[in-house]
Amino acid sequence: QVQLVESGGGLVQPGGSLRLSCAASGSIFRVYAMGWYRQAPGKQRELVAAITSAYNTNYADSVKGRFTISRDNAKNTVYLQMNRLKPEDTAVYYCNADIWGSLGTHNYWGQGTQVTVSS
Image (cartoon, rainbow, N blue to C red; front, side):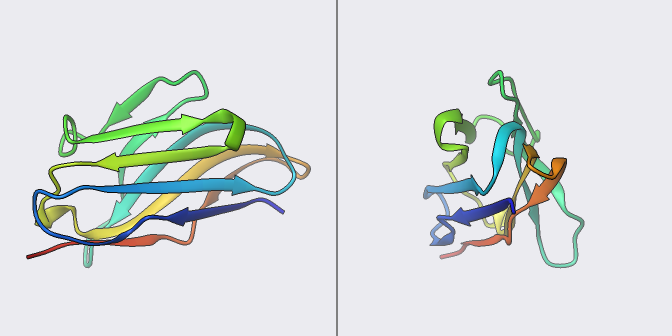
């Protein structure tokens, strides 16, 4: 069974930095696109950043220049480096990935990690 496990969330002051990690585990043949989404209270879940297996990236306009997505294919892990954090970045951040495993190719979500930006 494939799982995505996130880590790295927490409380940070405005202007600070956090690094999120998400590792895929289980019976995996290949991990395709990976990404980070977020959902703030009362709002819809939105794409923050995504990266293909060929390392092509795209970002939400609200995080361009502040967040960087990267991945380590050998570890089936995706990272989100978040700099110059703002209170409006407060949300639950979810990892997402398209994974080819023993049960075929499916889209998976992590359990979410809370990021709170507050003084």
